[in-house]
Length: 209
Length: 171
Image 1 (cartoon, rainbow over the protein chains, first blue to last red):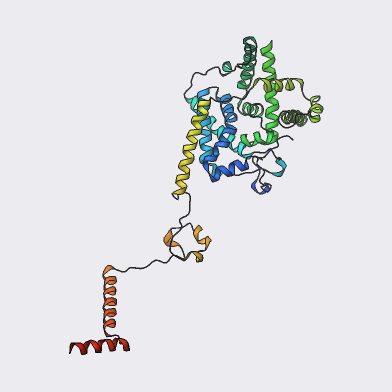
Image 2: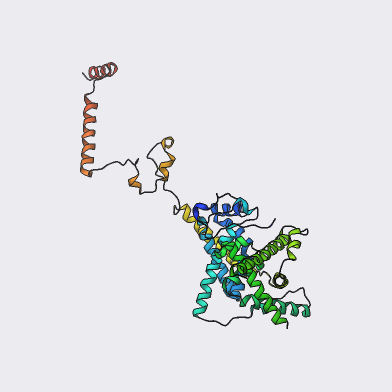
């Protein structure tokens, strides 16, 4: 069953369905609330996802590490404020904790991007570091070129289209999870991703000529 | 074609793309067997959108930070967690429970949730001390009265007999 969604951004409070505890991270979150040391399980589970989001957005390993650390520290210290909002319609795979965590990550990354805008820095070519040790050098080069082309195509996308594509393809989020992170309706996210894919297709086509 | 029809067409295309991506996600993560929904939607999907999504799925990997970074942050989170536990143990997030106001069996749990200052608790009973002089005077008066009563209290028959024998021996 597809991982269905969770969060109706902008939905009026009175129209919200009754909360039922279906969040797939419920046990881990409850344990962390009782004993903050148990937050480590959530940290290990979502580290690569949060780091990847920050890395695609910031294009720099050091900045991505800094944003990742800030995200998890903020999540731990504010865990008591987290409200589970999974609905029966969301299915077994829903995680409102992940949506909440990525909302924090998005804010942290936005802050970093604003700071960078005020004080521009030289960026590394992030895609150049993509490599797989198991490949032979020729395959590695081809893979690196493909990854660079995909990276550039994502990088050229404007704001929320880029974020939506990263959350969809890198972090494998459902439409409603992405809507929760971006604070938009599911319909808006569907249109964002569709248009983003058409832009990426045009970009990749130009690159292959 | 009207603007509304164009918008509807765009939304339908976006919905088809979304269904396709959701079915790919389900296929890749939850259902290893071929998904009939995905195959029925592929025909209606724009070819360039399908190619772009295939390229991104293949060439946009998920990254993992270095092991050193992972362990450093884990250590920092553990330190923060420990400080949160200490704060809670010290009452930073807890409830102050007064001791000795009532016998334990008469404490109403709701009273312990009273959030105001301790002196404003409705059941709070504090001993009132007007002044040290008054207190010590009261104690002195009570002591003098006790000694006077002790010395003049009526003796028991046995005590009277003992005193009479003692007086006889001395005479």
